[in-house]
Structures are given as structure tokens and as C-alpha cells.
Image (tube, rainbow, N blue to C red; front, side, top):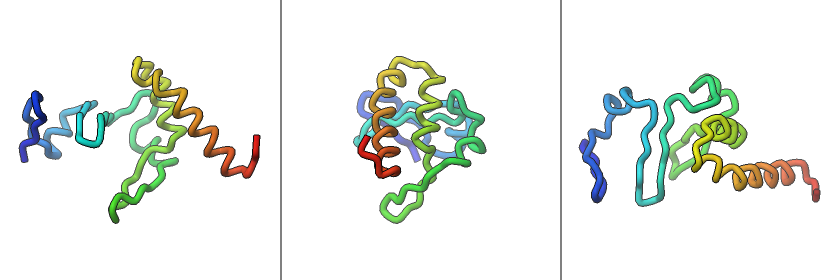
Length: 105
């Protein structure tokens, strides 16, 4: 299957294509998606799988890195767009921990 974006380059969107990649930056109708096969600051899949959560997407179970691991990776990557995202991610993490603990602090 060939995939192409308006004003983008066509590419074969299959397992063979992704086997050759260490990172893929994709633009989709739902927004930008970075696919990192060896995320910075992590030991890769085995490391991230330990704390992964599962998200149900229309009946499909999608294992997803935990928010803490995403923050760890974005901090280690130190790219401008990752650094820019950290304040929001850290606040979301703070709010989730607050809700989980039942604290009003």
C-alpha cells in the first residue's frame, strides 16, 4: 500500500518500510504523529512495556507508553518541540496524581 500526503512524498506504509526507520514524523488528518522505535532516554520496547497502559480505540487495544515514560523520553530527547510540550504533560501528570490520591492539593 502506498501512502502519500498533499505536497508530501509517497511511501510504502508497510512493515518493511518501518523496519528501516528509527523515527518517523507523520502528518495526519488527526494531527502530527512521531513514531519513535527507540525513544530517547529509554531502553526501548522492553523498558516501556513495563509501565505501558492499554487504550481502547474503537475496540482495538493499543499498548501505549505511560505518561511518566513519555515525559522521561521527551526530557532526554531535548528537542525544542519536546521541551515545549513538557509543561503541559507535567501538569496533566500532576492532575492525574492529584485525582488518584483524592487530594485537593
